[in-house]
Length: 333
Image (cartoon, rainbow, N blue to C red; front, side):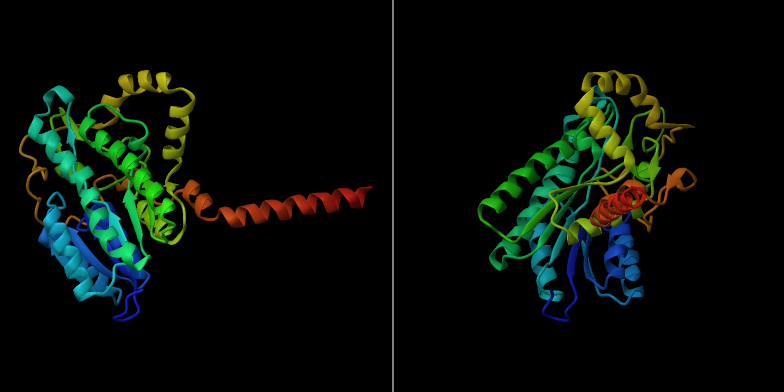
């Protein structure tokens, strides 16, 4: 905990919109002090107001997570202003929706620098401070796509696969050192975030998350829970579990299914706007909030996540139920 005012100090990258914005609100409701990292100042200022509305403190840090020196300076600024960092959430991302043959080398590199190396740099900055104190938690925002890639997002899927391998390696090193610093990865389902309005896309129709879709608050709940519990991975959403299990049982069948359905499922029936903005190189300014355009089609809760976060109580209920059956059966004898 922070020595300044006793509140937890949490850093969130990609904090201005989408999952990051919902995560900021979730931690703020818990009384945390938040350091907010993203490129767009307007979104960060709006996120800071969310924190302050819940009585918390917020530090706005506009920067590009692909710049390791900027990330390191930000970590120094956080600890100088708010106190020792307790939780670091690596969430910032970007993507390109296009067949691989239509993505330039520069675009692919940019997605990798933000989505993968941004996580590496954030983890470096966090560990430099947490390891000497032997305390702290790093939460990587992953995806079902870290296990099972889909067409049209080769750069993003490659980055998420990379984050998974990177995180597993760091986890092993921390275990070897018997460190109390924890690192975990939360794998997400399709989410209703504003990224589909600004992601660089060469698809004929407007991009969309692959249904079924969940609200970003489901992701924020999973991130908050992961920061509080000692699990190397957390799966959020029934579709995440179904996808990962299908990939284990019948990967080649899933290959053929995604090849057939993956193009259609990532596009709406609305033609793409040729003048739509893209945030690949520069932020799309404004306050975009946490939700995208798919509220009417999105699930506000996940029964699977509830079961995951209440596993102990479910186990106890199962034991109690079994005991009652035994008592009832003996009573009939």
